[in-house]
Length: 315
Image 1 (cartoon, rainbow, N blue to C red):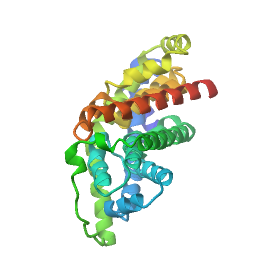
Image 2 (image 1 turned 90 degrees about the vertical axis):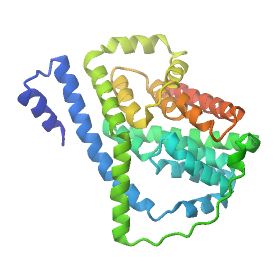
Image 3 (image 1 turned 30 degrees about the vertical axis):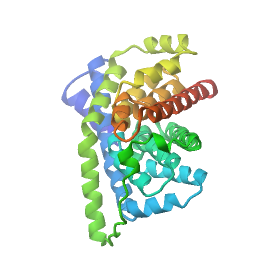
Image 4 (image 1 turned 180 degrees about the horizontal axis):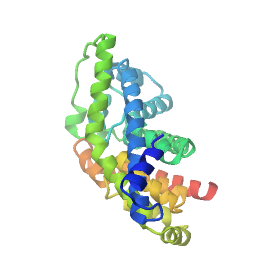
């Protein structure tokens, strides 16, 4: 729908050639920007409206009453429906803990919320299609559930910061909303989410457009073909210092995929950027002791690397 508009703007109005690198990169940037923001407006509004029927108090009570495995699955699923970065997910993470939700269950949410949310899925569907999006969704949920289960089995509650373990809030009365209030909430929430992430999306698309137009494909192919064993761990290590979030990282990963980067390596990099970043650990230090952060990071790292290898050898 937006490709003819991008073609007209770049190739007719501006006058660049499709064979020109700048023209190719600019066309990629304009097309992806229009396509992604349109999809985000529609989907985030719809998800926000549905979420107005699920207040946090009800979600916490629901999770605290579930068996561990079932609770982990539901918590990871809730993370998919929340377009949070780590800093936004931490308040709800604390809320789960003080409501009596098992710690392993809360970690499944903490992994899936920044890594596998509707923003990531919208971007993946728009840029690389629904098949890769479903693959990422499935593997991300598995990583979130397994990480939560392992952490829960280790019973690391004593490694939470004291002020987190000692916080206990009373029940808050659930508000009954009218349809007009729900629509207003959905509009405001959509506007708030886009206001917080639009710049990261534009920067990510710009980097992806540069890669698409200017970086020769044989460079990526040479790297991936010579790094069958070390490509995935290297991608994970490269992702740790970054804090782009799914919105900023996916356009870059898409451009690398188009240049020939193996799917498993690309997914491992994306998971590391969104769920295993150094800034995330600095934020988590406010609620966890160092030993728990190291346990969390170690389990996630192993899970992500194994996922990358699996898809490199299977797909």
